[in-house]
Length: 127
Image (cartoon, helix red, strand yellow):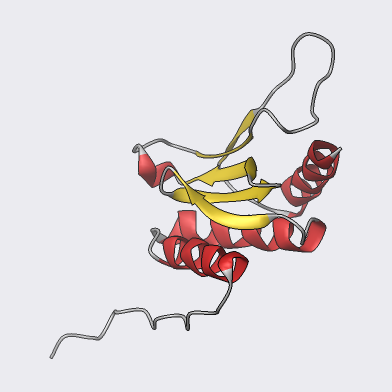
């Protein structure tokens, strides 16, 4: 008899922000192990640092919006068969530093040092 590998469904919450959060968590739950672990940790960082951001899907990947516009996102490595996941920021992010600055970062693992960097970037991006 085959083992039941189906993941339990998350209960649907009411409200637009709650629905976006549920969609993001469902999308993360469906990712392969390595992507899922990083995406869950990334999601936890965003929720802890900026609980005012609204989770939503953006091009099928987890994203967090400020005033209806995507501020940051997580893209699983498996999305395009890449060797690294990506987290990035959209135009509303207040990351400007002269005439050139990074808006996306490759991520092969998410440990404490990377978490601290992500926290600082998200705080800066919020303005």
